[in-house]
Length: 132
Image 1 (cartoon, one colour):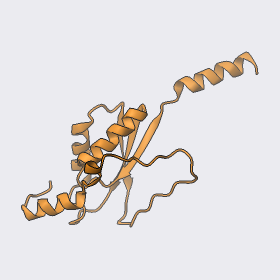
Image 2 (cartoon, rainbow, N blue to C red; image 1 turned 135 degrees about the vertical axis):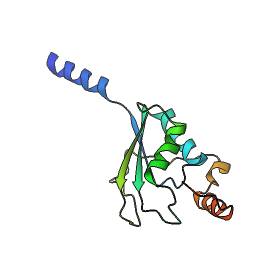
Image 3 (cartoon, rainbow, N blue to C red; image 1 turned 60 degrees about the vertical axis):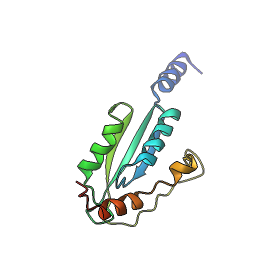
């Protein structure tokens, strides 16, 4: 190994930012999602949220701007939480991971695990609250 190799190795190591990735519709972004992002940030320097750009339906009442706003209300620091919008042309999405490396399942307390966006939307519609 030469001095140049060591220098390049040090520069590469120093520039790595540990990043966790979290994908979802976030319809709406709720306490369970918030706790997942907090857990990601406890274990990583940053969290990149891949926000699925879904069509407006009863299951997806919030547009992309509203969902970004809900997330940013909890995580205003763009240097720690990056939100990237990804196309979702009405697909029944399945996320695939290449191999059993580099991913973790976020497990939270039982009460948080019980939070359901479906239940939140049902309550919202029962109370006739407009989502936007």
